[in-house]
Amino acid sequence: MNKQDLIKKLEDRRTITGNFQGYVVWWKDVKEIFEQLDESEIGHADEAPRYVKNILARLRELPLHDREVWLKAIMSEFEQDFSRAKWREGYEQGKIEG
Image (cartoon, rainbow, N blue to C red; front, side, top):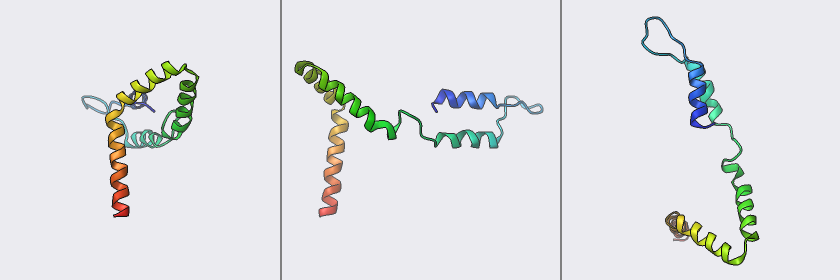
């Protein structure tokens, strides 16, 4: 569920009570909506391997020059994140071995 879906569900359940300036959403409704956030949806982490395989298959279909251009662009985009992940892996491995 994305933010817009969450907002829509909360707006659908809002209520005016007494002389209150604004709206009230009952706690049981809020709790029910937030419990739905735990449910996995397609396109999230559990689907990542399938998407990665799909991307890699498409990259393999490209001519060599185009593939190199794409890979350089991807690596430059995520260079800092990749470097941090590699550093963290080395650090964790050093803690275990050391």
